[in-house]
Image (cartoon, rainbow, N blue to C red; front, side, top):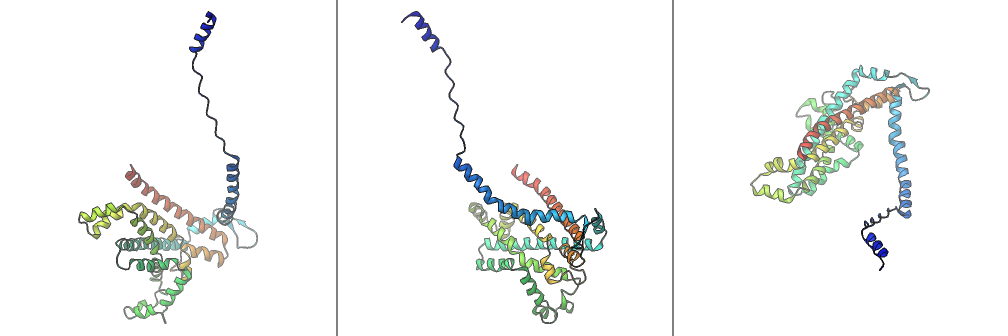
Length: 321
């Protein structure tokens, strides 16, 4: 081998190795891209319906809240006049007070009964499946059916429940016609109807608890009360917090049961924000005031929800931290 060839071979052997080839960039197959674009077309009808029946009514309510409009004819711009008139209206504050009372009693009653029923079902009491079905059944009944059922039962002339209560206290002969008891009766009827929803949620959470934890508590000699307060309920407190928020939101939107049982009466004893909105729009013909009431009601429940979540977050962060 010549000297020139040896020098060339030596130089070649001392060169840096060539860099590895770059991996080829994966491209989405044309068939997958076509499938993804086709999926968007299937979503568009749902988006369009959501805009038509959810977003558009909300935006229209905000728009009408700054106008005076009887339902037909031209709109009259009043700015914040509807809101200022509403804030000085005693009937608005009375309706808001009834809303708060209904929300507190319904949430507390359904959560308390739901927990008791769920613990009994988790303990597999005798005939627990039958109890679960009977307790949940009112929740799936139409509100109108429930209202007619209890209105007839409390009728002052022929109601079977009135016949039982009249000998106990003659003042209980017309509970729905008495301004001091009508709102409480509606709250109790709603608790009876909706206690099944928290029960199902809590029963599902309790059934998913680790069997080892429950068995360890029993081996330590814990009784039923100690098992519930020290083991079961602390382990499902996130579920309890979520259901409480859902019940608060649901109860604050009350309208149907009040409208069906008393229509806000007697007088305005059971008037809530929902019935006030209905009366302002369809009885008084003031859709602007009704829209302003709806906007304020939405803001109030939004603020309540954020406050609840704000106080709930530190405890959750401390547990996860």
